[in-house]
Image (cartoon, rainbow, N blue to C red):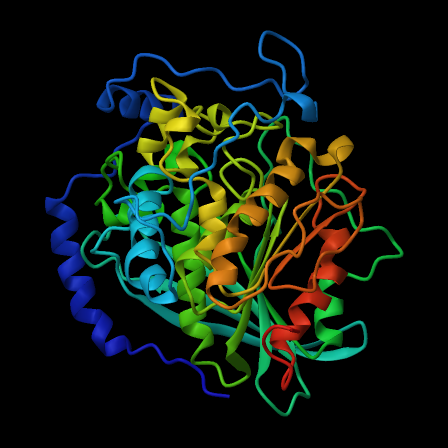
Length: 456
């Protein structure tokens, strides 16, 4: 195995330069989330935002779980219509014209623009450990990605990853990259993710049984999951500790950037097949997984679990969590500042894009989307994600891939995995665990050696 080597002789001049720069540069700005949120509102000349819905269904703005009231915005933006109103009728027009238009809209209005001065990441293998999992011999590498902070030494960013592969594999293996909740501090008032049932094999064990590996990425080592952290982390580093502008990236895009940097490392690891890397995440990290898949075409397949508002669920739908919740001071940091406009004075119908087009940016690569029942996972609006997949289908077909195969919402625990878009709603709560076996079956068509591509 080749191990990346840090060239310490090259770091010494940077440290000397960094010391001189630190003395002349201002310290990072300290703002609370509420203060930074108000700063953005002032910059956008917004006097008030519409309130989000109440999670418990009480009060003046109760959450809606009634399907009969869910679709007051029936017209979705069409991913196959150019900005000049002309239809997209060829794959060439999609790749050269329409897809870049959609990327620009998501950059400016939804997730934010990645700065041009994003620094390099230098990977270090901190340790290599032999172990076993469910009787399978493994090798686990603790990886740290040191982000070059020579232009602003007051902020350090070190991306933390654990990469586990089967020890006895004779060939490079596929890897599932997970944006992990492992050791993640849950915000106050939000329940922890439920544990796996005792009868359920851990997803990592299911992966190893396939002779695949997995990488656990801790997203908050890239960017904090709060508004107060926006002047630190990778966003703060690029801005030299200053607050972001309304069109700059939020945490979702920053986490996705970090996922791509992990993939950069995986392309250098001889134990890994860099052409067979999947990305997976749940809840807010399901949003990050989808954004990663949409922006980085090197990822082969994605599992997006219960990603809800700001993820795969349609913004133009009145069910579960709403755009206005995401635009509030507790979650706005996920998005571009410009996103706040659509919670006041503009509305969701004014959004130039919706999540069907985010899924379409992944085409023709396979995407599996899952979630729980309304009783346990209604806040994430699993059906809203299904409808977004349906509306992304025409782009998949244009590019020679296969859509979900139906426009009818399937019965609970019915797997739709014969096409390049996959879907399943399980009967449990806000958890990715029940859908993992179905995702693995779906992904096997693309990740197993000699069995890549569509089943059709």
